[in-house]
Image (cartoon, rainbow, N blue to C red; front, side, top):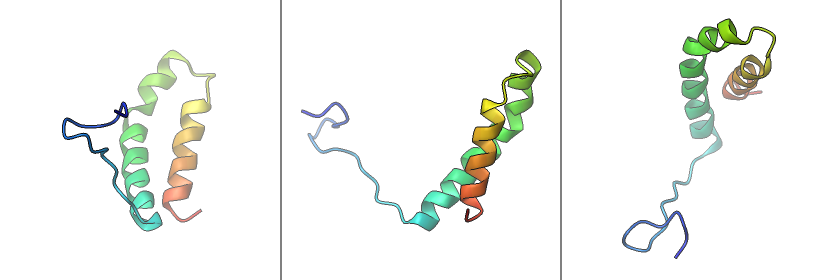
Length: 63
C-alpha cells in the first residue's frame, strides 16, 4: 500500500489548474510573509526564507 494511501486504500490526490496552484501559492506566501520577521530576527544574514517567499509571490503573481 502506498505510504500516502488512506484507510480505503485510495491515494489522496487533488488535481489543480495552474491558476489554482498560483492562488494557493499566493496564500502560502502571504502566511509565511507575516512571520518572516521572526526568522530574520534570529538569523538576519540568512536570506533563503525571504528569497523563497519572494519567489513564491512572483509565481503567484504570474511570473
